[in-house]
Length: 210
Image 1: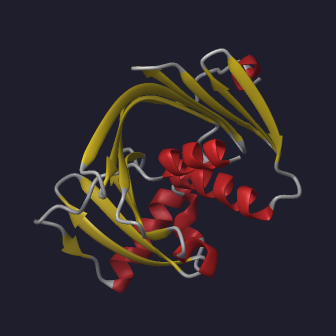
Image 2: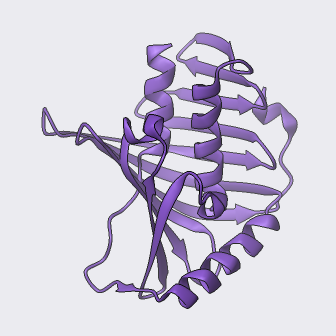
């Protein structure tokens, strides 16, 4: 369970900080931007991308980098596959989580685990940008930089505050897609993930999520 939870946090906490030239949006601009992102998110049936992931440990001043591929199929199928330097795969298939580390495979039913369900929902909604409408879960501020919209989400719920200081999502302002996300843990650690070669609404086999 500890290893699975660590993988979940590693997935979620991986995105880039605010640019010094970012300009804070007015309330009206914020509302219009979130509406534009939400409209784009609703059109996404599938999403796939390559990613680079940097795990930063504040205590040991360590930095670990990995490469991989991500596949998402609406509404709740996710495959997060690290290909380098080691082979690790995490699959979320509705209420089941499948973890493959090397030759070892484990399965976890999260149907009765509310905390794990919340974590899975956070992962999926961060990828699609749908958590920008979760007013009950986050305080949200929006800024604009060159070619980017940057959303900073501050958790409201006690369980999220215990894990995260903030979640930062960076969107391409033309495609309305997430290109970078940063989550800052309360421990001071963070993970940075950059997405590239992003493709939407391409056919994805359900076998990817088994």
